[in-house]
Length: 94
Image 1 (cartoon, rainbow, N blue to C red):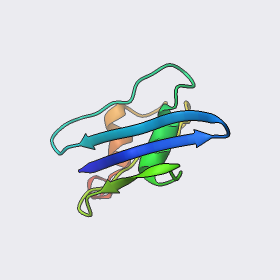
Image 2 (cartoon, rainbow, N blue to C red):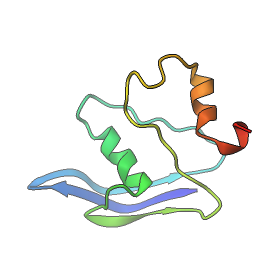
Image 3 (tube, rainbow, N blue to C red):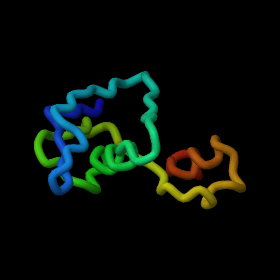
């Protein structure tokens, strides 16, 4: 499970997120949607630990993992979605 508690993120004087509380529970699929520039990639960077929140915390169950693909529109264009996902899971690439 991934838990987001009281998360806030500010850049300069701009507040991007404030007091976000979420739980991503096992057995569910989640998507992040929004307009260009809304902060989707930034939110994923927070979940991955590539960015630190201004306040709050993100915890990932020790038996779970978070993975993502870089936002490169051409890197995987020759692969199906399934093949792309499988590349990110070492047990499936054996």
